Length: 319
View 1: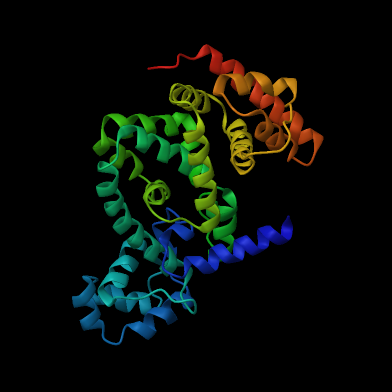
View 2: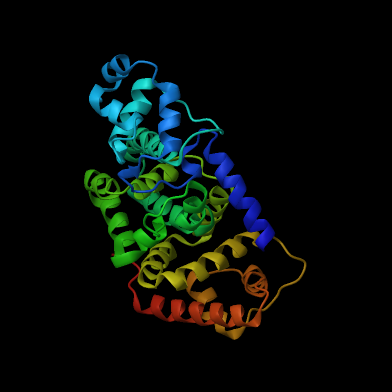
């Protein structure tokens, strides 16, 4: 609903200020307008040009040009040097959007280094599950640019992390590299701050909504028989992004309703091949299907699941 989306948008934005880099989107922007807002903020924190130049490595003349507005554009690298050198802290008030974005980049890089260490300790299978479940947990509502761009007043790329990983089988490539060559995986995911943030989110607490979605996806994968997990992965990677999003909804609802019920509900005929292939329970499958409010949504889900089941039959269970 509009109200719930507005509340979640506000909560996401406020949470981003409270120290967790995983709670707001990072834009791959490297140059910003030298606005009066930005100059005023920097002027409050730069009491001495000489001291700041020594502390940050930014030339004294460049600092002067920025503060006096002679420089029309400011590089992100310059702002990151100021953040680190002056030890600026993020607070809820009077922080210009470029500083928020560059502070996020600093934190992303720190968290990305920590995530590398943690990922190396996991098995290839656990890494694969983490990548897919985190991908399923992502949503444009909180991490897509439509929300954060409006809040931060940026006009950069409209792509969210699912747009990036969902294109040209990049999700499949990320999974393959995570299993075969971790260093190449880190290089691949390190090309964008959005994919870096995604890697951090795999190993850390996310926004509460996204974390719940990720955990529901992980729970679904874990209820599948081991032999069916690989089939599910192969099929999920073979369908388009629109179909993936519908499968994501079904999976979350299935886990929510996967409990003991006094009655058994028979699912529609169109869903039965899906049940048989993945060895799912009939009642939670039925409830997950009928949770959708409109017949049109149910018809789309039934078609996607039917195509999913048919495609799954054509794929080998093992590599």
